[in-house]
Length: 175
Image (tube, rainbow, N blue to C red; front, side, top):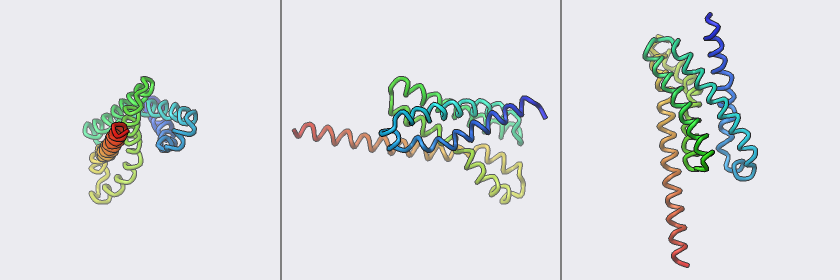
């Protein structure tokens, strides 16, 4: 086995597992508001783990079973995960909380591809009776539906914020 592939593999699964394990905590409003220091500490670990894991994922995607279709699916996932995580981090550094929240929702949706892949792959392998065919499909459907869900979560958040802003504006004019 190629030692660089092994390094890439473990640099993907270990930090990726950490990101998956702690990422959900960041969506707790109570922790964000009452324990901001903890939120920042966990966020630092999540961002570091996600950036390392996504870069390693891009590298090992080059060796994916199924050739260019699986490789391009997993590379796109790795690139999107890296981009959304970096953009979420840079947004909060620039004090743009809304952009930070939006991009971190996308980041964790990409992170959750690890879970959806493990749900879909055995089901598709059984359905097709062929692991490789299943793997070609799962390279894409393990993450694209997650991003669609993230898009609708973000859209709903924006709509709720807009309604709140309108209500506050209305109340201000009433006074």
